[in-house]
Length: 198
Image 1 (cartoon, rainbow, N blue to C red):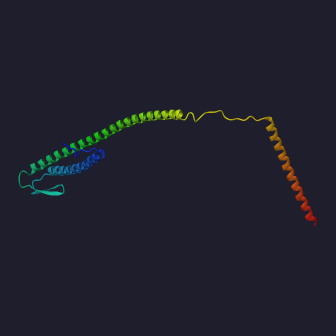
Image 2 (image 1 turned 60 degrees about the horizontal axis):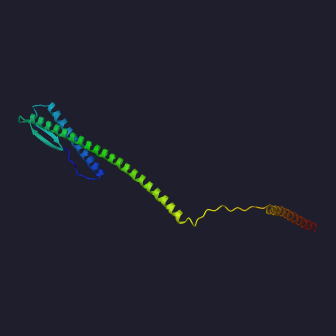
Image 3 (image 1 turned 180 degrees about the vertical axis):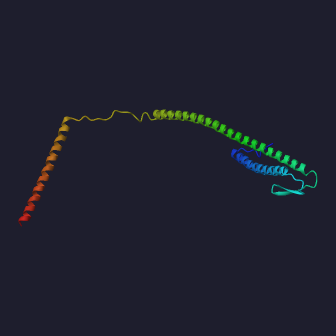
């Protein structure tokens, strides 16, 4: 009963088409429900005195002449037609909802399959990259092994003579520094005394 609107590879377009069709069917359902309610109320309030009855149909008014004997059966026929139309609309809505769910389920299963394939491709690529890196290191080591040689670290043995000379240097340097400060301070004090005496 429901026709595929167009075959598309893009599931988003298909979902938009389904949603649009659902909106259209909901509007048709509301119109049919309104007309059914109107016809049912008219059948319940049936009076032989009325000569003409006005029925609203999709925004248009239909005038039914009650002078003929078939107007009551005409109400019943229209009511039956509207109920059939409403049931067809409900079937179409149910079918479209089913198709939308199938599309969503298909999309999620496709995403899972793609993720599995992607993970396997990434894993195999990582293994291949690791092999390439190991081969590159081996090639580098083989090619440049004669240039790079590992040697022992250079250490110098300190003799006691150099240690002794260094220690004497620190002591003499400290002594000379102290003497300089004392002599300079003495000269400064003497100049100060001479200025005060004058």
